[in-house]
Structures are given as structure tokens and as C-alpha cells.
Image (cartoon, rainbow, N blue to C red; front, side):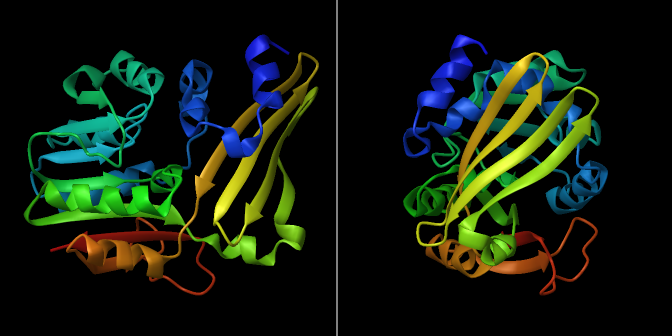
Length: 255
């Protein structure tokens, strides 16, 4: 175990800085774990962009932005992690995207966009309701007339069935290595404290993550405070209807 991992182990989760979840080590390995629906997400967003331009909040390594830009959409981005942006710039096509380090709640850009989007639960990395509301307000302020703000996030339904609001889940298993997801959820604060733990012959590695989950109803109220309203809601990027059994939620807001 290296010094950084020892420090992570000693730090109480309530004092953990979410930006630390996206350091150089994470950025280097981030694209090794794809979900498989990236192409569908790009096609969905391309249609809404209608020629662009587009702004991605929490752009990360460009998993969505680079293929979207390859379809002719001018894409810009903001991310809290310099390491993730550096990884984006090192990838083919990444040098065509203007990305800056910044707080996604601030949306500190000068221009307006046809499409602004935040995917893969990244809105939940903003740890307070106030900052999540601020993200909606600042996104709305940078939308063109008729533009769309798209938010993707898992539904917290799975947390409602947890025993003692905690779980341990086996993510990966191989000869000489296992990966575990260990988490605790507070239904009052809506905070999920989580760590992806890898145990191998080389030792134990921790990848902590703290997020604030919100229900679609709360998200709709945030949009209303920003002067936006819900235009579409789907269970996935293929536009399947959302159901009680759905685990994901894609919301499209507009003026």
C-alpha cells in the first residue's frame, strides 16, 4: 500500500473531497471500464444538439465528447479534475475539444449552447442540494433559446431495499484478484459513501467516492427554480419508457 492509499484509509468519508476520486491513477484507468451504451448516448445527444454547439459538464476523459465531436458537433467541456482533462487531450480527437478545469456548478463559460449535458451520475458528485440547484441555474443561463439540458443519473431505488442502508457487492473476480464495491447510504442526507476495493497479491487498493443522489421529482423542482421544465424522460439512451423497475433515468429539460 502506498502513501496515498494510507492517507485515503485514514480520512473519514465525511471529510473526503470528491475531486480526489478522479486523480491521475483513476484517469489512467478510467476508460478500461465502459458501460456499453456510449454509442447510443452519443446518438441521443447528437439529435438534441441539432448542429451544436454543446457543453459537457464533468467531461472527464472525453468518452462521450470525442465521438460526439467526431459527428460534427462543436463540443466544449468543464471538469473538476485536471488529470481527467489531461487524459482527454492525450486521446485521438481530444485536441479538438476545448476543456477547462472548473466547478460544474459554476458553468464558468462565456458563450451559450444548443445543448448542455451531464451524464454518468456526475450531477451527484455535487455534494449539496444548493450546488446541484446552482448547476441547473447556471446551465439554464447558458442555453440558447430552444436548447436542452440533459441529465443522466441512476435512480436510488436500489438503496431503499438495503439492510441497514449498506452493502458489499462483488464487482470482479480473477485468479489472484477480487474487486468489491462497499457502500453505506444515508436516506436522510441522500449521501452515498462508497469505496471500490481491489484485493490482490500486490495488496489492497481503495477508490473512494462520495455522491448525493436525488430523485427525479427533486430534480424537476431544481429545473423549475432555474426556469426550465421537463421535456422528455427515458429509462435509457434508446428511449425506452421509464418504469417502476428502471434503474437509470435520462431527463431532458428546456425553457
